[in-house]
Length: 501
Image (tube, rainbow, N blue to C red; front, side, top):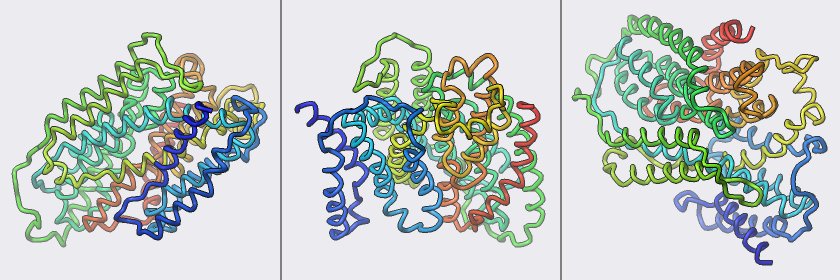
């Protein structure tokens, strides 16, 4: 009974996280309605049902178990487009609904313990390390302020994009994008043609630039958590990242020079007063070095000690790493002046949104991964056949394009996990031997093709929103895709011939 009570409180805390409301957004009536919904659902979830099974058998699971996961991703894809105001207010509740649609049948069929073990596995082995890294990078980068006024010439704009591309692999795409998008927009605030500047910024800084290390983009960090060596990513992602960056930076320079020559409506006076370029919050660069060191430490130091939590294993090196990341984020909050974060318009909304959405994703993806691990014995046999030859060998070009296209319209982090497990899920086997190019295809597809749409990677929409706040008329969802497919698709075809054929 005691154990059951403790587990009930753990899941109750999970639900409270989903249903929490900001007081400034919701009125008392809405809060009362939300609580009535919770009261109706909680008895279903926490009924003390007998345990019928301890784990999923992917070969026996129906594809119906994947519906909640698919609906979470579909909601993320179309919610901001079809119902932006409702999505902004209720995305946590919507995600909680789909998560409960998975958890309630799970508990009813497999038992309470199976439900708890599934949630704990998602938290301990995937969600907590994932969100703490994002939290540390987001918090620390938000404490670095680039202040001053530059003038957006083609050479300057290309330089800023190049710097952001390099920083993205060490600060994360979110951190680098949030650090540099405002100075870039300010530098071009007297130009008529600015859309292409933001579009290429999304291509390079918010996506492709993050492909060099596991720190750069969430998919690669998830691979690192699954056992992919830090230096494997650095070594083998360097050529495609370098090729992509050089081609796109060169294309941008000549395109920007063309538009710059057409600036017949440049304002006679720059609306932003000239001021010396300054960087505030420099101590945060040392903290970023601490983040890199902590992640490297967890990949190199293997003491062989782990803690079992309801069937999941929390390795000592991961516990130390996560503790360091949290401590570095708190130190950044403590030492960074309030004025610096105010200058960056820093707030917690983006990380809270990512935290709520990905908690639902990591829980609901569990049966999908189990079915994929079952291979030909599972219900994804048709999908597996598309990326594997009749003799069972992977078709790496298909892995690249299928991972990439799904990353463009769903989310690149869970897509990486899906195809990583489809390829066998064994990091050691994927890093060497005949499966080497398969892991490279999954890594390149998930990182690079996240740039094909606004919803492919979290920073894409954040950059778009900031640009629109600064009066840049950004393309529509499909208008952006005209840019991205027109420019990036030929590049990805080139990568296919270079690396996978």
